[in-house]
Length: 260
Ligand SMILES: Nc1ncnc2c1ncn2[C@@H]1O[C@H](COP(=O)(O)OP(=O)(O)O)[C@@H](O)[C@H]1O
Ligand SMILES: [Mg+2]
Image 1 (spheres, protein in one colour):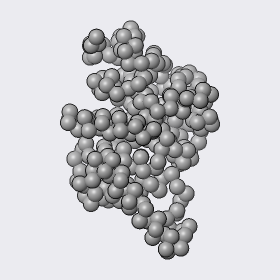
Image 2 (cartoon, helix red, strand yellow):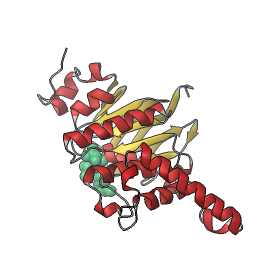
Image 3 (cartoon, protein in one colour):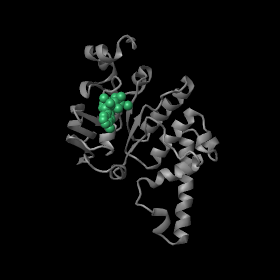
């Protein structure tokens, strides 16, 4: 595998009964890039994330992450390899505060019972204090330092999305997969998340993004993968993908007018 690639998907297929949701798909993600996945509803975008993160097993094919085939591993095993993800519907511990969510997020990539059982009380206290400090840093990074003690359920929608991204970052990932992170947001909220994604990339985390809003995709992506019926239509820089006839015909239509 090419050394500047972090993820390489090879001949990946997933059948659901008679439906081929991912069809002999191959593509690569380079280290440090923002790589977006676009395509109509039902194209297989979320299925692709589910395959990469171990929530479903492939019918065929390889998923090479940092040189190792992770296809078929369980979600917790993939998470420990430092692949993090958010879901299309926000998943948080809604009764817990922002800070508590960001502490819980740090446990995901650790062995079970890390804080509870591995050390004596003194070490435990030290680790707990470190976890709080890290949670405060993360709250600041995702723009929620004013909400540290607010229950997640009481946050505005945009802030909940910011927190769900913070929880993934808490696992200290090398690659993060974001499934429609600006879905249902106002323009102001979208700007906050776009900036956050750009800041994530600055910390050397590679970002894969499923997104419908073309203004967002064209603004932040280094490269784009376009899918239709689980088949690759294009994999290239935004300027090329948005001029691809097949992509225009099956997805973009007149929704996105190329500014040139
Ligand atoms: N667990 C599942 N069982 C059966 N069919 C599924 C399952 N998950 C997704 N599909 C089907 O696979 C196709 C791709 O779905 P999905 O990956 O959710 O698309 P997208 O995220 O691009 O909108 C759809 O036709 C969907 O109905
Ligand atoms: Mg989806």
